[in-house]
Amino acid sequence: MKHLSRLLTCIAALSLASLQACSSFGGPVSGVVIDETTGKPVVDAIVVMRWHGNWTKIFGESSSACYHVETARTDAAGRYQIAAWSRPWSFSDLRFTSAGVDYHAYKPGYVTVFKEGTITLPARIVVTPFKGTKDEYFEQVLSSPAWWCEQGGTSRRGLRQLLVATASEAAALAETQNQRGLASFLASQIDDPFDEEIRVMR
Image 1 (spheres, rainbow, N blue to C red):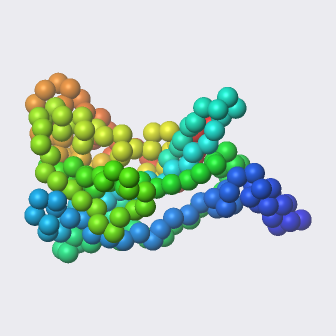
Image 2: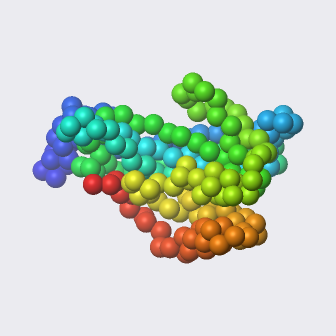
C-alpha cells in the first residue's frame, strides 16, 4: 500500500510539473578550464555547478531556487569531473515548471568568462585575469552571489572547499573595513553545520 501511494503521488507529480518532480538528479559533468589570455589549462581551479528550478506564482511572478551544488578541482591538465548525484523528490518540488544548471570557476586573481547566448554547459570553461580595483574584485568575485544557493538551500558539503579558498584569499587581500568584514563572513561559513537534507524555499 505504501509503495502504491508513492507511485500514485509520483504520477500526479509528473502530470503537474515535469520529470524533475519525481527525482532530482544531475551529472556527471566533465570538462577543462582554460586561461583566455594564454590558451593553456588552469590547474587547481574550483569549478562550481549549481542546479536550480523555476516556477511561476499565482499572479504571474517568477521565482527560482537553487537546490543542489557540486564542486571539483581541476587537475594538472586543467580537467575537472563532477560525479552524478540524485535525491528523492519532495512535494515542494511540484512547483517547478523548469530546471537548469549554471557554472562558474574560481581561481585566485581570475574571473569566469561567459559567452552571450550560451545555453548548454560548455566543454571548456574559460577564465581570464581580473582587471579592476581590489574593491571590485571583492564585490564581483569573492562576494559573487554566483557561489551561493541563497534562495533554496543545498547540501553545503560541496561548497566547503570553495569557502575555504575564498576566505583564505579574502583574508590575505583585505585592507579596508568592508573587505575585512567580508573575509570574516566567509571564514564564519566554513564551520557551519552542513545541511544533509536539501531544502527548497517555501
